[in-house]
Amino acid sequence: MNYAIISDIHSNYDALSAVLADILRSRVDRVICLGDIVGYGAEPQKCLEAVKGLTTWTVAGNHDYAAIGKMPLSFFNINARRAAEWTATVLSPAERRYLAALPLQRHISAGDHELVAVHSTPSRPEEWHYILSIDEAEYQFEQFPQPVCLIGHSHQPVFWQLSAKGECSIVGKEYLRLERNRRYIINCGSVGQPRDGDPRACYALCDSERMEVVVRRVEYNVAAAQKKIVRAGLPPRLAERLAHGT
Ligand code: ZN
Image 1 (tube, rainbow, N blue to C red):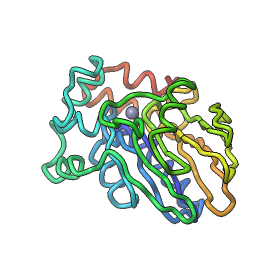
Image 2: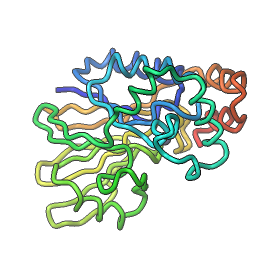
Image 3: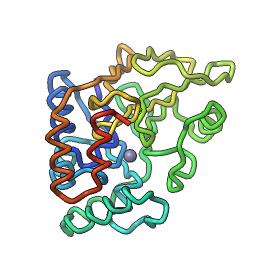
Image 4: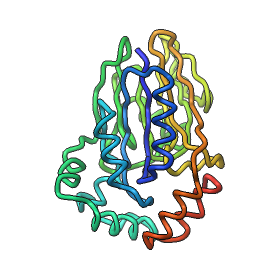
C-alpha cells in the first residue's frame, strides 16, 4: 500500500494543488492529513474542500481548532492570532462543523503498518507540544504502542528512530528505510509553510511493502500565494516568509 502524508497546509491552496498533482502521479492508495489545514494563508475554503475530497484519515491541528474557537488564541503570536480571526470570518457553518469534528489522533492500519497519526505529540496532543529534542522524542516513544507515529506541527521534516536497544536518534530528513525491530516518529514537514529553509512544498510518501518513506519537495507558485495573503489583508510577514521557507 502506498500512502501520502500531508500536514500544515495552512490555507495555501497554491502549494496544496501542486502537492496533490504530485501525489496523483505517484499512484497513492490513501492520503493521511495531520492537521493545520487552515490558518496563516488566504484560501482556507479551497484547502478544506480538497482535503475533504481526497483524504481518508485526517486529524486536527491547533490552527484548525483556533479558527473555530475550540482553542484559546492567547497561545498564538500576533500574526497567527490575526490569521485565525480572519479565517473565522470566512468559514461556513458546515466548514466549522467539519473542523470541530476532527479528532486529535487516529490509530490507522495502512497495509502492514500500524500507525498513530497526530498533529503534535501522542502524549497530551491537546497541549500542542513540539518534538524538537532527543529527550522529548524518547519520552514520546513511551506514549504510544504502535511501531510508527506520524506527526507534523514543527513544519520541518525529520525521522526519529528508537532502536531495539532503546536508543533514540535522528536518522534522516529525506529518506527512511523502515526496519521491523525499530520504531519511528515521522515528521512529514509542511505543505503550505515550510520552515526548514526550503520554500518548496513538503510532504511524504510511504510504500508499506518496500518499507520506505520518501520526503518529496514540490515547486509551486509562491508569488501567487503571497499576493492572495496581502490582498486578504493578512499580516505581510505571512507572505514574506513563504519565499524563504522560514
Ligand atoms: Zn502548523
